[in-house]
Amino acid sequence: MSWKQSYLERAQRLAATPVTSPDFQREWNSLEDDILGKLALWQAADLYDFVAAIPGQGSMVIISMMPDDLPHGE
Image (cartoon, rainbow, N blue to C red):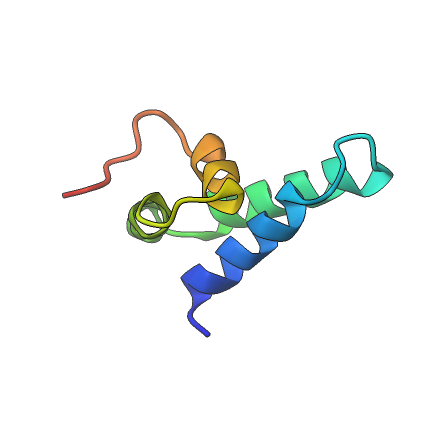
């Protein structure tokens, strides 16, 4: 499994978690920290392009975490 697929699977699990669950905010923060804090800019852009091509709630979770000025699709 690729690293991008791993992020997508985490986001899909998060999308299936009720927002009222005590785990939701913790998991959201963890995924967001991993995407924005640990990935290089080119990796975040690559992840964005990967999930943008895959319709689903997990993709939307990741896209919603990305900064608006992320250089992607280049």
